[in-house]
Image (cartoon, rainbow, N blue to C red; front, side):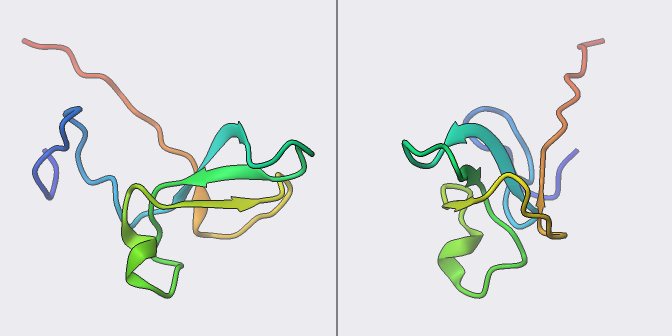
Length: 76
């Protein structure tokens, strides 16, 4: 399965990969979106927490920004 134990929701290995785009706007001007999670591209330990939040304009592209794809397995 995962490299680490699952979180309370049963999800594995959430931290340290990429910040994930969310559909939430960061401000009322709706010019920047919320980024959630953790990434290897941040330079301080707090940025590696899955609870970390950041913001960027929707057209900002970097290798440490992305999305998470979840495939729900079925029990045999």
